[in-house]
Length: 169
Image (spheres, helix red, strand yellow):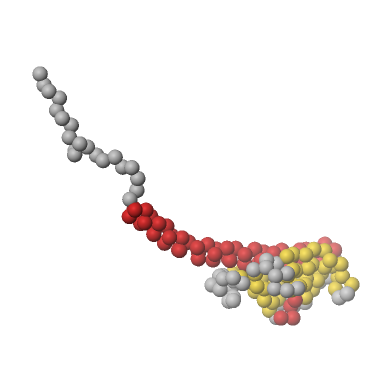
């Protein structure tokens, strides 16, 4: 009769019961490196999105004024109003001067910096014959991040509205 052989414990695989301290430390270091790379890119992406959003808001206000001037056959006034560094808006009104009626207003993101070129362009008039009183460019940047991609919204004397990534902050 054959006798059962003894099973040697030295040849069997060890049961793994957890992670070693070195493995945990390596994992934490790798995660820290990934986070260090991702956080600046994430803040950059958020800043770019804020700039695009503000650019779209300004373009919408200008397009509304242009459309309303054609529909109502009246001059429309577009005013950029800055109460303080965080409370800014664009107001679209029917008429000009002291005889105007507000139609709508658009809030500007508090983290966006808007520069108007020329500086006298804070009040823009779009006539009923689809003409603007001046070429005006709205330069949009982000207050928090310096290396973002700025946008420009431009309205020409012919009331053509363009929106593009351009300029510098």
